[in-house]
Length: 180
Ligand code: IMP
Ligand code: MG
Picture 1 (cartoon, helix red, strand yellow):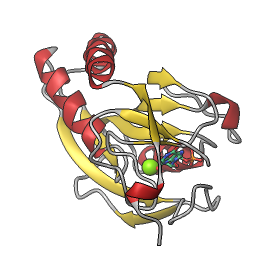
Picture 2 (tube, helix red, strand yellow):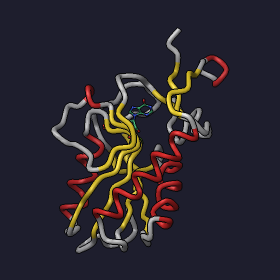
Picture 3 (cartoon, protein in one colour):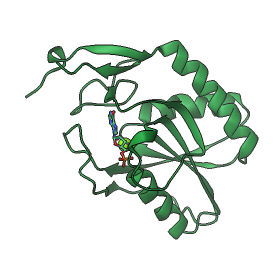
Picture 4 (cartoon, protein in one colour):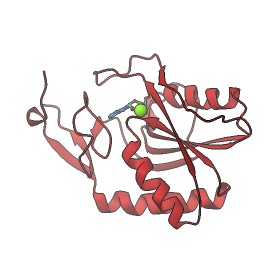
């Protein structure tokens, strides 16, 4: 079993940089979407981001409702399995709702495409997406996010909710796992 002490982490985005970007994102969202939108958080990776984002939305004058959905494509590996599984569904009816899907990382695009298709199939009136990180060069499905925190290269990142085999979610910054 790998343990946190076997990995070295280099900071990519500090707590302060993340906080500033989240505040700006909330402003962009409030300019573009109605105040009573339904935020659908894709667990687990985006729970820290979503917690900060909805509070920034409140400061921007919005009153989001929040639902959670668990989608999984990675298992314990550093590479996606390519298959998206819905392991926990939302509990509210999304029919006729303005939905903002919040996720951690846009990579191949499969996870986000799956979530968007599901919300649209259930009759959401609008489906927009807010991603903390965009690994643009890894895209395999033709999908772009409406709101992006930071664009990054092809690096495996952890912290601020993101994990490597369930480790490092509690780091307050986003870092890169050094490959030794
Ligand atoms: P996609 O379906 O290929 O776009 O994969 C996106 C999902 O893979 C994200 O929601 C993350 O859960 C996971 N993921 C992708 N890259 C990383 C990473 O660098 N660190 C941690 N999780 C990642
Ligand atoms: Mg995820």
